[in-house]
Image 1 (cartoon, one colour):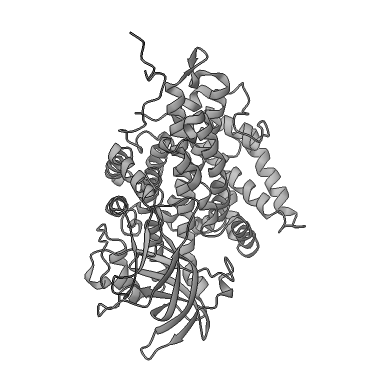
Image 2: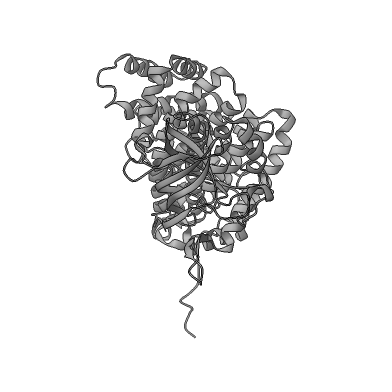
Length: 544
């Protein structure tokens, strides 16, 4: 009898059925470091519950379904009436509902809320990143609405609710709502002051009619949106509800959905306003200042989202190599592959550690921490999101041809990986924001230097990097052309200082040697061979 030609051997089992939170040592340590002991046990329980969901076969199946069946625009009903709705696969609603119920829009209402939500957002991104957009917009709308106490009192309880209800109804009749955002226009892009959408005052004080076109509208199925438009007094922020208080639909004309590289489960749209009813948020002419709190919060979510994608990519690569055999042994034990995995693990841990430190600054809320965020947040958004794509691509390569196949899940991570670098201000916008913080807010640099100074004397390469950074900051010649370089160095030095203080010695040593000391190459897998790379890889290994 001929032998079977289809015996399956030497394949890694699927990485499912595990606690995504508990298996992430840098994340669990950061949560323990930044949360008050009084809420720590409760937070760990909630995060582990979310982590088990994120690592379950059921949720991974929902994620695949939501991406295999992207949203569909429905402009008219069968009779020709304009409806302007987006239809989603049921799996999308399950994923989004789970994120809402897990508190990913309620950071502002509980002790340690930003650290708890940040950890949860990082965990849930690893299950499916597309649902993170409406969760992020809804969370981030709160600081903008707080510029108008009456609006905040009305809307904030709905935004921070843990109840998800998908049907479009007047917001006052819903236990919880989602928010989107529409700022950019085709002629301006990041230059929102060039917007042409016009806002005409109506009879009722504080209400306007909007007319114009938005090139990108995030989460167009949401209950309400924050929108920038040109009022008589200049660029102004507005709240645009999808459904008016009397139950009629607001004029919100969905022109098309964007056909995106990744993030395919989530809808991004072009939208037309034609006398659309809106309520002013903040003062006329101060729209950019009003909405900047929302932008800052979503930028932190870009850092968290990229950290989550990197962590999942690294977890998949380490898991595969721990089970796959080649050349007489496990891949994870082969010196060169170990070097690659350790290098990837360093990038992931540095991103997670920095992201949770910034979330803790939000919880603190003090003047020093706000000043730190002003400089550290755009630098982190610039650098961490830039590192996501090369990490995802290298992790896919660790799986060989298997990583190039859709069923592995790695191609979805690769397609998603550039997104956070583009959203909420691309690289140049972040680098120039770093320059603005340095030029206009000297307390921001003071706060940054105090933070990195806490690690001085612990590693000679970090000390030298701090000195070199100060030298570079003292030289303002051609500073705009060097803005990216400055943002990169600010982020790397801050990451190095945090790892020296909080990570195991082998992790801090490897990071400082390769990222600050110049003892590493341009590609992953070029760490000095004298380092304890096995311990770095073992720390990154997920439990399955």
